[in-house]
Length: 272
Ligand SMILES: O=P(O)(O)O[C@@H]1C[C@H](O)[C@@H](CO)O1
Ligand SMILES: O=c1cc[nH]c(=O)[nH]1
View 1 (cartoon, rainbow, N blue to C red):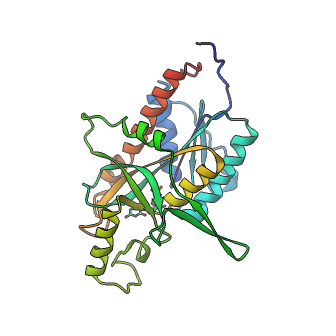
View 2 (view 1 turned 90 degrees about the horizontal axis):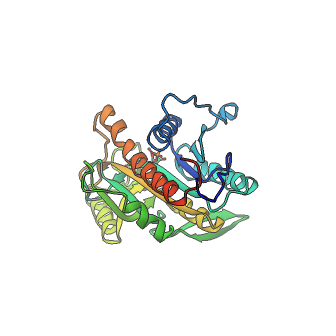
């Protein structure tokens, strides 16, 4: 078991992602693939909040956060408080999600190095008492590289390391043309997406700058691992069939579970 006693009950890893379904799946995935336990009874610990779902498997918490920065930062700040009260030692928080890719094949996975806001700044800007508070949106470099190194040549998908734009909107904010409102052309869109690519942005979702900024401010290591559902240079609609999309959503889970497994093996803390 090693000389570090297992700290049963205290979370060491928190994984957050948009949907309740996905985060239950992640808890099942970790239970089976990290702890080799089948048919564990999972309980939604925040069922009565009616807001988000929380599952706990050993030292791993799996929590849903809804769509976009306001709901994600609310959940993330609850988690930061919880980790503090639980006296968690050096916890790691991951976001596993979906995104639109830039010039990479749909189904690829992106491990984020930093978040970019809608004004193309690597910061999360939040209005506080009538003023804008600007927080840097840089993710832990060593952690993102370690997670990236989990990718293998045998994977049936490509994994990339790069910037992630987190927009405040799914449609206009991501330069889509298929929303109910649109005031730009196909040429404007392509020019914008090319510009993002040149800046090192690999994918677009709706949480990255805030997640990067708040984990950094809290002094907690954080990482974002998202699968891309489409190549935004080729279109706006997510047209891949549902079954395939659900399979692709397991890719970030597999990478994060592999990382957790390796981390637990090397720390010999008695969980496995
Ligand atoms: O975690 P998910 O897959 O929900 O993240 C992306 C970004 C938005 O929250 C949402 C938009 O469909 O998906
Ligand atoms: O294009 C996409 C796909 C998923 N989520 C997003 O925010 N954008």
